Length: 378
Ligand SMILES: *Cc1c(COP(=O)(O)O)cnc(C)c1O
Figure 1 (cartoon, rainbow, N blue to C red):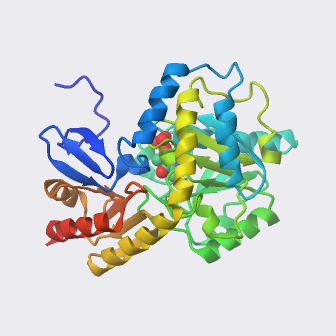
Figure 2: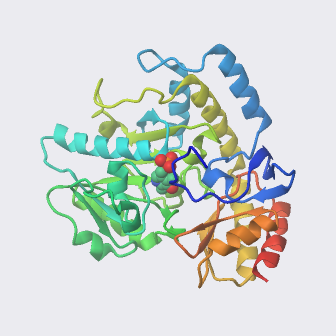
């Protein structure tokens, strides 16, 4: 009997310790971790420098509330804006869904401040933006809505890589478009370059805010600091961040270009925990470290992709260290088999094996993973 709500189907393994790219269970078995807490442990498990920062900051100040000045937020925000394509400002929260909520609220407020009744959003089928009502309404997967209806008014879903399907959903009341550059939970589905270029054009032409959800793709995951930066023409008005930003401490952020950010004024939005000194201090270190890791994420990612293609299991999708193999069959069973082989992988969208390893992954780990995968799929 468990005292926990039954909202997760948990795999039968108890991890009790981690080090680098490896996890250890309660029986002392070692596993190569290729999911990293769903793209969270970007610097691996128990990175010594992060442990040191957590400990020293905890001794100084863990939490102080947003009633007071917070230099740790200032430092981190400056670093995040430096990687943005233009000047901007940041709001800190604690998770991906909250960063999306802030983005949606900010977008609506921006148009209301301009005296326009633009409140609708076009999102995409198979997208995932979170589990609270705004982000859930944006999420383009009916299975997550079931039993929780009605969703918020004003959300509709177009087909990724089909610009006409976007056109059809626009009207005078559309505030913006929200998408992932590579859909994560939806099955590692990349948006095509040509489609993104047209989408950017459309936003300009129809006066729409472009919101890019970088919760999974951001902070180095795909080999660029923000995944949208693979496309020089993309100029999002708002981006959302979380997952890898804290390398394990819970932190989310919403980054908007200067003019849009002005619409949050004292009292218009907030978070009790958001951006406390402890998480900001850690994330600040993570950002520096990830910037150094980018060339390696690109090269190890390319190598990983090539080796996965050689396995001939299905179409290999994604970029950097965000990769997926689309199987012709359900993949749940393979996750269990992989655990038996000492390999932690993930199955998403029913038939896509997803890899989101720590960004410190090296080629030798890829080789180890491929040998294990051969046994899993033999
Ligand atoms: C995981 C995810 C979210 C939600 O993040 P939580 O921290 O679980 O709330 C939102 N958007 C994308 C793209 C994600 O991958």
